[in-house]
Length: 502
Image (cartoon, rainbow, N blue to C red; front, side):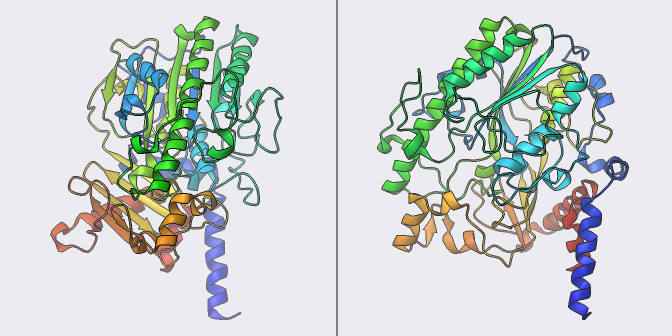
């Protein structure tokens, strides 16, 4: 065996060893690193001065997940064009977070984080579940349905599932049009928002003696607008938008085809909003709203170049609204930097369910939910490896209030495009014209990225000027890189072998 082959075998062995970690090893590593602000679930009650002692007595959870809905794309988040009255009402009744972050900008991987409380490089769901990717969460992981089933909860998911295996995500009722899973005739896909609400109504009335955890996951506003926007879904009003009225985000070019696609996207967002209205009405009529914690999130950023699949803010800084029946203050705008890694601890805090036999890197949001600017919530991490199986581009990120550092672990590769983004009219227009810029960013720099990207977010909120090598910033990159490496080590990132061999 030659030296290179031996080196590759050694690398493969290192990766396998890290991937197949035992739960005991994970606990030991996670507990050893204080920089992650890991909170033992046993201590959550001590922190929850603003929430009552956890109990599972009809402490219900309704988790609403949209697909590719951006931060700025609803009325309550400042868009004056989009009609989203039901999201707006939910925000007035609850808490609207301005700095909520997914940990990855891809559907399956993001959902795995939401349901397990582990970063996707820890839980193993590196990318898409469906099709030729067929990526799986590790079998040792205990997802939310596992721990809540054991707590006596009635658990269900209606709509987009997109994770596997079932043993990690054993929802008692799974109603989805996803390929490979049980289909419901009443569902014209996961955009049939009225029928999804009727399925939710049946779920809410089926086992009233048990507390419930219900996830309702829409496919809106994911691409496929030409087909989906043409369908006459039952009881859904088609909101048609004039492309001239759309708001072009700074990372996209202001071109006719971009505005056309944004108008189609807006229509899909309005259908999503109507679905949320149907769903919340079903919850109210069930008589169970008074005991139900409601969480609304999107899995990742909008389906346009520069957002989805990117760890720039448009890909991971997303809407989050939480409404609790025991809130004393409503209509709060909260600027805490919260993460989707915090969702499982939040649900465990609310339900009182026993945590998995390993520490979770997140913490419950409930203790600070009614504060505008809580202290100690000023750092988040992100991790991306795959979207489709052909889209290998591992990135790791640390983001603070002032800075973001992106480590591109395979920076010599061209940045890959999701197939629907590549064939979009937006990107094809850029290619056809030979544009040098895509909004504020140079096309060349978008496709070819350096190993390290450092952005001064206070002076450069659109993440355009990489100051990683700027002497003006002195020790900032080294400090962030060191913190990032500690986080990778603590969360058993298989890609820590890069530090050893490169």
